[in-house]
Image (cartoon, rainbow, N blue to C red):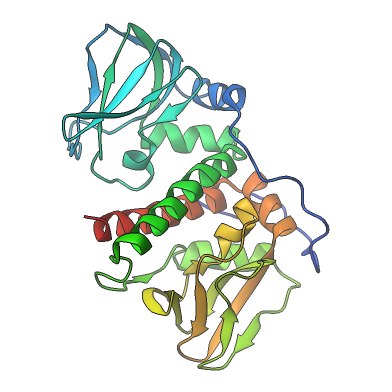
Length: 292
């Protein structure tokens, strides 16, 4: 996503404290249909046809696709067991495109069906026309991520694995974001300072400009955010309580973004939404590994 650029978006005035936010975004099949139609074309599959297979990683000549189902019914199969289904208007397979991840299930046509599929290039093209769709995908991925965290807590596997360091924005994208938020002073946190607390309400998401932040859940370290890293966005997407605690591991300089500014950025800057989606997808991948 290094070719994404914030510079085409006109500067915005940063808001102070957010006003009463609108209801959290919910899935809208009509919006999803329009998004997919903006960059893809319908294709049909006979009953029994496999659209993609579990553990498929794609390849040099085979780009993975995400889909929206127009007509028919799709069944999702993992380890030879049917684990769910897809109804008309619903999307599926997005993780393989957003996170370049191996498929976690097989998608098979239960009946004759019609779908529209988008590969990564088409997905980015569609985002340029309808960037607000990123918010809907974030909501879907947030729900999945919170469910995974709940399962990991129950199984005692939440803190398994290595707490890697994430950077959602590269230097170019980070500079573009700072430019868009010009006029808003960065916030400074000394090493050891708690930035946000698990279980509390969240008014801001944070982008790390300098330093390193430790992210923990139930007292156990699960991730780190370095320069270009992002945390706290989940609470802005679904307006739920914080899923994790963030502590400044070193002296930090952060850009705080409230929900009004967050929604504005998602709806007007495809690069911002695409970057956050990629970050959520990487986080989901990490949690899925812990779940194995």
